[in-house]
Structure formats: C-alpha cells, structure tokens
Length: 131
Image 1 (cartoon, one colour):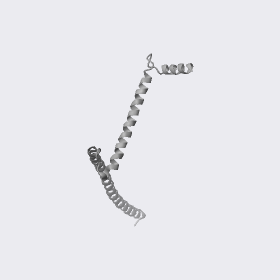
Image 2: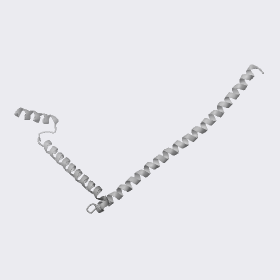
Image 3: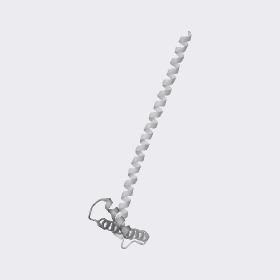
Image 4: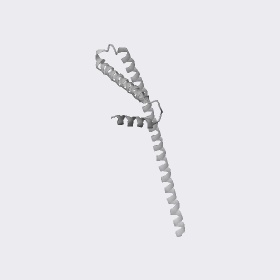
C-alpha cells in the first residue's frame, strides 16, 4: 500500500470517529436542552402556582379579618390586634401626607403674579431682606 493510500485510509477512519463523536455529542446536547426546557417550564409553573396560592391565602385572610375584626377568636386575637394597629398607623401616615400636600399647595398659591420659579426666588430674597 502506498503512503497516499495509508493516509487516505487513516483520514476516513478519523472522519468516521469524528462523525460518531459529533453524533453522540449532538444527542447529549439534545437531551440536555430538553431537560433544561422542561426544568424552566416546571419552574414557571411552580411560580404561577405559588402566586395563585398567595392570592387565595390573602383573600381568605382578608375575609376572615373582615368577619372577625371586632370580635376575634382567642387563637387569632394577637394577629387581629396587630393588623388593627397597622391600619391605624397607616391611616395616620396617610392623613399626615394629605395635610402636607394641602400645606404645600397653599404655599404655592402665596404668589399669584406668575408661575415662574424666579418669583419664588424673589420672594425668598424679600423675606431675607426683611430680617
């Protein structure tokens, strides 16, 4: 056999081996891709189910609170009281915010001459000059 024939034979064998390895690598990659896709789908499904669960759980808690907020059962008295206090704090902060907004809007109406920011600067300068 000539050296060219030997080279040709070895090249065919190498290409066959490369083709076999490539085919096997493709199959492994395909299986992994399918596994990853299934994992991603399951994770998305789990996230949706958890969100639905939280929503249902919250609705149940809201309904229970509304029904028993004035006369809680002994086992839930602490939680109901904590929620009532949280509502009171929230209402106080909302009232404070509304008062602040009303106060700010009345300060803005103090000068009717223009809508320009320079006017406010002039008013501030006038106030400092009076001192």
